[in-house]
Length: 81
Image (tube, rainbow, N blue to C red; front, side, top):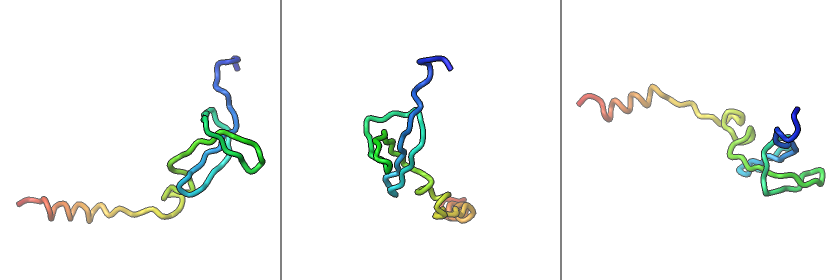
């Protein structure tokens, strides 16, 4: 690779504060905030809104949308008058 062309690829902690889940991986993202990880080292931390620990698809808390019922209710309210 060419020198000084690509961003630095370093360990970063991604944290989902809504469920208290965090994982350490490598990324080119940077952050001014840091966190001390389980190994005693300090890493930059990136807060994410949704992770596999909080996403309904992965947790099994997903809802099934009844589109037919919605259409029927719409037609009852605003249908031909």
